[in-house]
Length: 506
Image 1: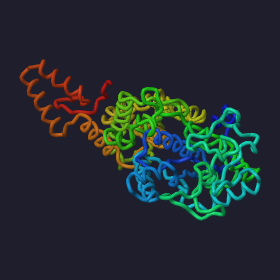
Image 2: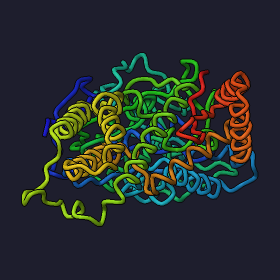
Image 3: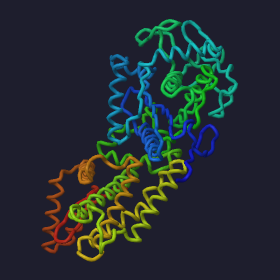
Image 4: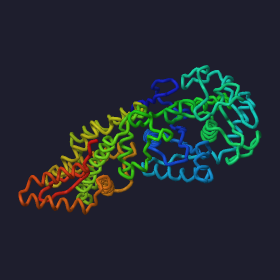
């Protein structure tokens, strides 16, 4: 197995991955601030780190994966006040919605999903330790971290302290010793949730929450800390300062950051209002299509949203699942025969064809080479993967004909299909439902995008069939073209016509 290399944002280079404890990995990923439905930028982070989680386990590691929910934050409070709702209740509702979205996208549940409101004791204890170590000061019930006390401040982001202004979530406060000092604890204000502390009632600042929860579940030393690239500064920079101030032995082995999803090359975000929620996309496209789209670029590069790319992803997923379904159908008549037992032919075990053996070897080697090189998912589903699907499609028909090589062909298709499924499973693209169900779900989404029902399509096919019977080929072609403009492709197979989704051009 190839050495696994990851790009470390701290050193700005790829490094061979070596966990603190052999065959065990500890990983913390910053989750969402839950005050609204999550957008596809959030989905990208979740999907990319889910692939890392799956791939680490495939390599034989036991992974402890922690992804938090921020349920105490300024944005949550503002939204709750506007809606006349309790902030914790509002956040709880959107935590549940996020969990539904993650299930739809086939992101596996992390080992732990801590919420800030459940970890006040750990947060207060860490702030107390930071104060005792003389890295923080108290002003009127607020606690601020003194960045000048931490000489390595800026080591992750590369920013110089003299050029740093207060973080995006922190308003400049004249009581601060340095404008870059940030809040560890905020004194209680009317209409806000608050908790008792040694400095009076209040609530934690944003940054301390992740430091306390990561230390609680993984200790101060752990392997991987991940999140979006926008979290490098100030959030992750401040996490490093806090954690080291609380415990000098604090250390993260690898800092990983995924790129933005952009809309017309501008970062997609709630504050700008140029975003699409996960739900808005999955109402019209299968969640697997969205996941495929999110994996179509390297996780560190920007990914520009476009309808045409989603259409292409949907088309690719349909081709994969239609191939797997047809392969399953072709193999099923042989399931109870000698082939099921691995079979013998002329007293010898049946071997797969050299062509299949070469394709499988190339597919798995290519997959391992790309994944071990900083999770390069961008081109995994091209090349050898497509060759394997093509092999399946070409050899299903010969399987149905009785011939001396039928058993060998059966086994070759079985093993090629297994290799394809292995790749899909690691990428989180292998559905838990049947291939046939996924194909039908993809067709249903295509109908929604076209604004048609199944009956509408069947009626149109009947009209086209009549036109062809009457040798009105101009009308027949016109009907086919009009349907293709709606994302529906009519195909003639033998004496009948069927339909499938077709990618629309933007």
